[in-house]
Amino acid sequence: MPDSSPGSTGNTAPPSRRTVLAATAGLTAALAAGGTAHAGTPDDRRLHALIARMTLPEKVGQLFVMRVYGHSATAPDQADIDANRKEIGVRTAAELIAKYRVGGIIYFTWAHNTRNPHQIADLSNGIQKASLTQPRGLPVLISTDQEHGIVCRVGKPATLFPGAMAIGAGGSRADARALGRLAGQELRAMGIRQNYSPVADVNVNPANPVIGVRSFGAEPAAVAGLVAAEVAGYQRSRQVAATAKHFPGHGDTAVDSHYGFPVITHTREQWETLDAPPFRAAVRAGIDSIMTAHIMVPALDDSGDPATLSRPILTGILREELGYDGVVVTDSLGMEGVRTKYGDDRVPVLALKAGVDQLLNPPSLEVAWNAVLKAVRDGELTEARLDESILRILRLKAKLRLFDEPYVSQGGVDRNVGTPSHLATADRIADRTTTLLVNEGALLPLSHRTHPGLLVVGADPASPSGTTGPPTGVLAAALTELGFTATALSTGTAPSATTIARAVAAAREADAVVVGTYNVTASSTQKTLVEQLLATGRPVVAVAIRNPYDVSHLPAVPAYLASYSWTDVELRAAARVIAGRVGPRGRLPVPVQRADDPTRVLYPVGHGLSYGSGQYGSDQ
Image (cartoon, rainbow, N blue to C red; front, side, top):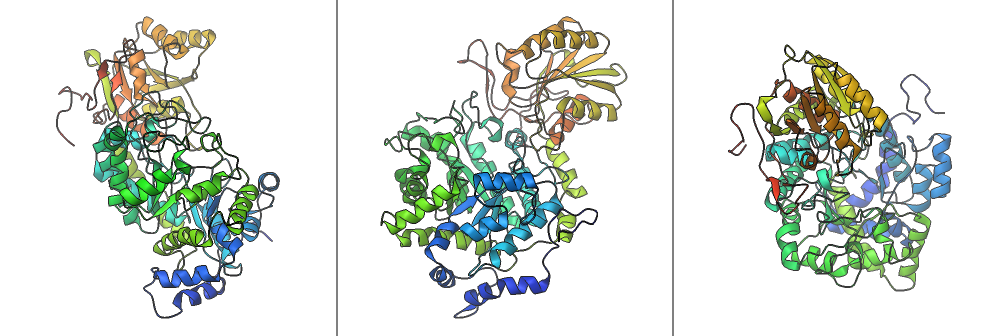
C-alpha cells in the first residue's frame, strides 16, 4: 500500500539496495560481458550487445520520449489515471513503460509530475524501477524544459534562475556557467537527466511570439558564447545532458510553431551569419543533444517540409557539415508546425528518415509507435537505422551513468535542491541583469524617506513556474521589505476603464507608482493605464516584466526598467534597483526599435544606464 505518513507523496519508498541490485543485475551482466569497462562508460561493443538482445518492439519504444500524467509511477490521482487512459491507453507511468518500453519520459507541471522536489525524486525512482524490472529492462532518460525565466517545470523550493535574455543582459559567461552547473546539480538530484535548455535561437524579430526572452539576445556571437558557457556548466554538474534548441534556428519567426507553421526566409548566407553560430558553438562545446524546430527554411531545404522532417537539414547540415554525432530529439510532435503537411502516423517515420533519434511526445503514442513498427516490417525503415539511433541514446545514458546510478535519494534532494547557497547565487546573478532604459531627472533610485508610500499596479500573468507571483504582489512585498509601504493592485494585461479609474484614484494617494508592463502594443489598454497614471503628476516607474520592447510604446515614462521575466528572482532584483540597494548593471541584448518607425532604433544593443555615470561603456 502507498505510504500515508506525513509528507508522503503517494509513491513507494525509495528502492532498497537489494531492489536496486536485483533490478540492474541482468543489465550489469550484459554490460560487463567480454571484459571490464570503466564505470559508466561502457564501450560501443557492450552497447551493441544490449541492442542485439532487444526485440523489435522494444527498439521502437526506446526511440520515444512520452508524457504521462501523475505524481506517482504507480499510484497517481484518479483524474490523472483517467487522463492517461484517454490519451495513452494506460493507467500509470509503470503501465506505459510495460506496454511501450519507452526510452524516455518528459515531465510537465500541467501533467502533475512536478509537485515538489521530494515527490519528483520518488516519481523518477518509480519510473526507473518500472523499467529496470522489465525483461531486458533499460534505464529511462527523464527530461523536462527547465529553461528558467518564463519556461520552468520545477518551481520552488528548487532554485529559479534568471531567464536567458536576462542572462544576456548581464553578459557574463561565468553566470551562464554557474546557472548550468547549479541547475544541473538540482535536476540530477531529482532524477531528471536531460534538460531541454539552453535556447540557442537568436531573437532578431521583436514580434517573435514563441522565443522572445527565452533567447539570450539578438547578436549571434554573444548568444553563441552564452550557449557554450551554459553547456559547459551542465557538463560540470555531471550526469545531466543539456539540449540546444531549436535547430536550425527559431529566432526570426512571427508564427508560434505550437499553433502554426513558421517559415524562415533567411538566405543560406544569412542563416550562416545569424542562426548557425550558437549551434556551432554548442557542438564545439560537446553538447549532448540538439532539439529540432518545426519550421520551414526554404534556403536550407525547398521541399516544403519542416526541419524536423528534413534530411538535408538534420543529416546534411547538422550531422555532416557541423559534424554533430550526438542525440537529435524532435520538438513535441503534438505541435501544429509538424502536423500541417503529414498525418500523425507519417511524422515519426519521416523524422527518423531525416536523422532524428528521439521522438518527443507524439499526440497518440499508439499511432506513432505502431507506425514506426510497421515501417520497419514493411521495409521503409531498416532495423539497422533504428539501431543507429538507439546506440546514440544508449551512449548518452551511459555517459550520464544511468546504467550505474539509475536511482536518486531523498538525502540527495535535501543536499542539492534549493540550498541557501544556490538561492544566493541566483539573486547575485539577477542583480547583474536588471536594465535601466530611461531615468529622466534621476528619478531612480527612489528613497523610502522621500517616497514612502508606493502603489504597485500592472499585469499579473500566470507564474512561469506555477509557484511564484503574482508580480504586483512580489514587487510590493519586496519593496516593503526594503523600507517602503507598498500596496499591490492588479490591473491585468487588458485593464478595463473601471480598473484604470480605480488605479488612478489609488495613485493620487501614493507618493510614487510602480507599474509592471507586459507585452504592450499600440492598441493595448495597458498604454492607456500608464498614460493616465502619468497624468496624475505622481512619479511613475515602469518595469517591463517580459519583453523590453514595451518601452517604445510608452516614451513619456520617466523611469523604465527591464527585468525580462516575472519570476520572483528577477522581480526582487528589480525592486533592489528601484530602491538603490544595487545599481542597474544590465545592458540590452536586443535592440529596441521605435514604435512609430520600426526602421529606426530607439535603444541599441548595449544600452543600459547606471546611477551616476550614464551608460555603461566597458565589458563586464
